[in-house]
Image 1 (cartoon, rainbow, N blue to C red):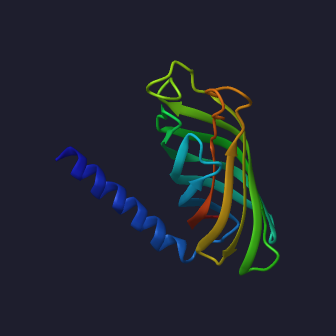
Image 2: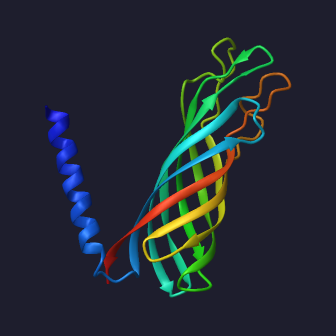
Amino acid sequence: MNSMKKTILALGVMTAGLVSAQSSDMRNMIKVGANVGLAVPAENASANLGLDVAYQNLVTPGFGLGIATGYSHFFGKENNGNNNNDFGVVPVAALIRVYPKQTGFYLGTDLGYGFIVGDEKVASNQNVDRPDGGFYIKPEIGYHNRDWNFALQYQKTFTGDKGEIGSQKYNAGAIGVGVGYNIPLGK
């Protein structure tokens, strides 16, 4: 019953935010979204599924800066006898967006550090430690309007040569699509 109360409270807060979003200024906003993709190259993971949360301030009507985080879950796959474990990436990044027009296409990227979380080993049948993280980048091109963003994106956490098993390189990258909702914060 306790989780039911929390769910109702969370829905109430989100509803209040969405109702107030209709009349607020769009200069400062929280962006909440989801993404799905295919791991590339697909050596230790097959696909990913993630949630994104970001704060953005429109410095000018066509240029936004902010901070971004979230969680991307990578699904491990069997490769050359390695039973690769699932893992997650939690980015802490700067958000940069360029909006040539008020509605239409945009370009952007997130740059920062991606913390890799999950099982301590790369594969359940190997004794190789998984990397802790590395430089994180997530370039994207998409379509936006006042409320929504739809994007084609690539995300990558660079791990160097950590976590490699024989000829299998450790990969924490994916190409995919994302959708996000803008919640205005006012002036």
